[in-house]
Image (cartoon, rainbow, N blue to C red; front, side, top):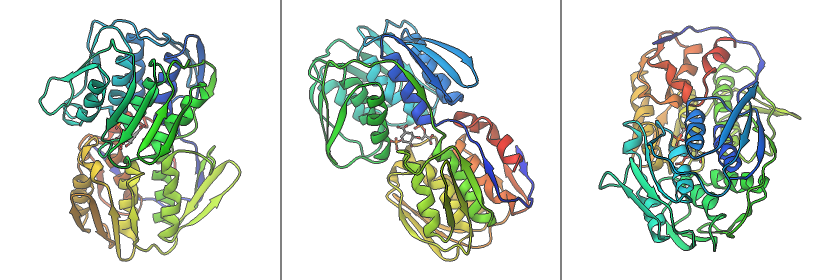
Length: 418
Ligand SMILES: O=C(O)C1=C[C@@H](OP(=O)(O)O)[C@@H](O)[C@H](O)C1
Ligand SMILES: C=C(OP(=O)(O)O)C(=O)O
């Protein structure tokens, strides 16, 4: 349990670690190549360790050099046989992206995770793989992990998938499809949630010389028989994690910069600065850093379908704002590390804030948050977001604070150094 002690902070700049989403993707693309890649500023966290462990089991040679710099010798287009289960904790990105990679192998892969991962959806991806002639099954009738993938058919072709619960399914098919004979022609029932993560996948594949494209919001294509080319890569800072510091700027009225980031980043959670600006914050966008400073905060209506990971931090800012904030189109938040709609709502209510929730929205009436012991549900984003009000309010305590290791192991050091 961590007690947060209120304190006066100054205007300042923070340096945060590399992006989790980019780190997963670069490790996977490098492993799919046939030569040596260098990846600098890789995020070192539980989830990235799980992806690296899996890729090693599949035959990649991954060596840590120093200072977040890794050397990867890929296994080429076909993962090696793998007798033991691949354990992926509660990393949805690892589970969904690597299921597609397993489908490129010649034997059976068993992908499993912790108790929560075994409740998170996978059936839509398994159905799509089966449509492509790949034997993909689950131990559970509802399709949740453990899942068993037996590669074999690399024909590719047309496939349909439902991405209303996760964009990670589509990222998986795109990365895998480039190595199939006929590529993939992927149609969706409706536009995917979390769509900026798909743009990120396509962009990182491009850095490895592999092309995939969006035809329209429900149609994607990737040509087959492409080759992932190794190279030297750099992981930019994680903009989901930048959001906690921007939110601190918002509620304290201090200018908090996050260093080494650009307004041209493809990370969807860059959008947090626009949301905070709409709530009354001032932005400073400089050459290589972006700062947010709070003013009089007001509630807003905001669609966060594209930026699910930013919801807890924005909800905290909303609890300090004047009036109501409605965060809509976030049903997929119920499928994350915990049911995040419920977690945000229950913990804000504990802090004396009025919150109502619907199946796909949160409505927060700003007020005067008070101290509370915060249950994190083993969700890093709940732990980090709810630490923020502790800078202003007495009595905030965060249970199981080490859960931040999923994506941001040195969060508490940076937070405490503010
Ligand atoms: O592809 C990715 O790197 C991610 C996609 C998002 O998930 P969904 O697409 O399941 O919403 C996001 O919540 C997750 O933290 C990372
Ligand atoms: C949902 C998240 O990650 P994942 O889906 O990879 O578990 C997250 O980091 O907030």
